[in-house]
Length: 579
Ligand code: ASP
Image (cartoon, rainbow, N blue to C red; front, side):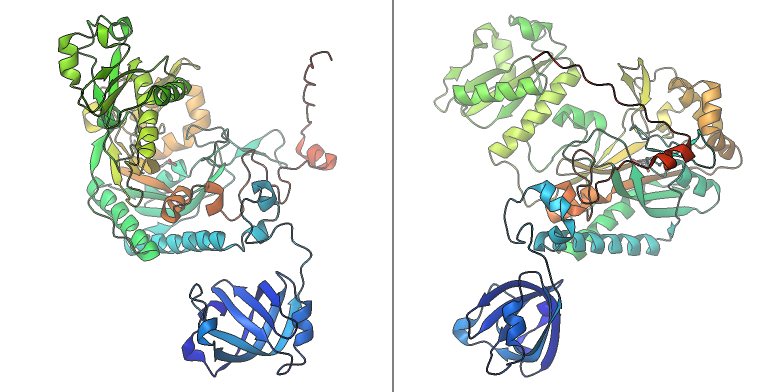
């Protein structure tokens, strides 16, 4: 292969095939960097030695496919290219064939800042770039390690259907009309959750799958509609075994793919603790800067905003902020839902600068204990709101002040999630994980009495502020499952229609079971240190859910719609303001 030629091959006759990466035509000599998946090798065409080859060399253009035969020779010392692994040698061409040509390129492979839509439109070219070649290969290697680890641990790869019924994971379903049963629809699974549980009821004991999950979500920068996950389930689940297996899987991936040793066992933190200390269920623990709570001492504060707030919490930032910097932080805090940003700055000489300090009592100031060189940034309001604002502020400040160790991988487990959360829009409870998650042991008997406080036997894997996966122990008792559906306000009829088969299965000898799923796309992002989710997916859609390459989603022929019994309702013309 092009990238594999080395000094030890000098004197050997070889044939290399690949793409013309670059070409330097000196008239008498032509140099071509020939590229394949493994790298680049310089080939040299000298008209005196290879009169038959020089024509092809002149004619070749970037991204033509060439095949070159010749002898590997050592480069003169001054011609060695230390940037290339093959840089000490080159191929002295004897024969050169143009195997395939290319039309002029919409962009050059080494061009920086090419518009992403253009890159996606010509994805086959984009994928030839070094970074994408690396990301996609890394992903494949990672999946290889995953498969080996799961197989060694006795897990069976069982495929589950794509055309199925809704399996809720909290997103909207993609639905597929049935031609044979007009008026009926399949749903694409949001995850194989119910099916993997059925493999346990079916006696397979240990299941895994690299599964594609479809979630019709409004797209954000870090979301796609088709996610790939490592999906895992086991009967008679043992949390220590499962956590150990996942830590082992990650450790092997990190070791074998990027040569990094991950420290184990990972720390564990309850959801409550993560919320208290970091304001989020996916804390970035690469740096400290933890949230502190002043709610108690400010309850009787002279500062009205503090006194009126259910929660007053703050970040103790080791930096003396200027007025302009604080104004900017306040702007950000407002974007994250704060009404304002109270602060206390104490400069290095000990002087305090703060519009609120005159309202604070000695007791309050003693508790806050602001040190020279510190700024306290406050959020006041409902607890959840202070969490949201301070967690975002924490990440911003951490990054801005360089507190984050960018080389570190800080893994942890977050456990003991709430079982339900109140959905204001729908005015009912919804499942935090999914409706098949069992309550924690203490809540098994009483979760229905106080759904808002009930805890679930659920856990997430978090690294550097990213949630990489999550899972839970499941409900295997039909009564308990029906009770959860009741809390979610599914009528008995709906329960039968949507989940009757699951309830039936649970009633026919279901072993206790539990599992987890890991997001392969996100894992690759973290592993490759790649900020763009689409750059770890070979053929992604853009942020509008469109594939600029194929044009999907596209219209279908009227005959096809007729066969499906579907009529398109024309979108309402939007009213335009006059003029
Ligand atoms: N089905 C869950 C998910 O896709 C994972 C699990 O509970 O195993 O997030």
